[in-house]
Image (cartoon, rainbow, N blue to C red):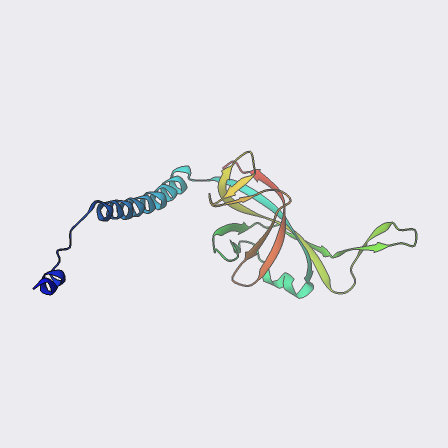
Length: 167
């Protein structure tokens, strides 16, 4: 008879079970609030317009055909909007630095079919003391590098300047 009673043991709800349930509900609420807060911050700031100038070095001359006025560029990997390419971008022969016999470097131009590009895009984000918060998600500043892509090409650029654009 004792054996039968042992198998019919009652399961009780105890305080540890209650604590676990409260913690799970709290985690779920925190996640929902976090993502709603991020969306609220993104939409509330609206974003300031900025002109982001960049330098692209040592690309093939044939790659020049992959850039056109008005092309949309995205941050590679995340597909966040980087900006729209402005007209007036310039291709120049790639810069090459040659060491002389006395240990100094002379700047020269490549003759191997390579180009450098200087261009800018119009982007939106928020200015801060540290730099520019691109689309309120990624900090960039002059001197930083960033991989960007369009529907035609993916490249890594050096950010040279970020200036506000008054609409």
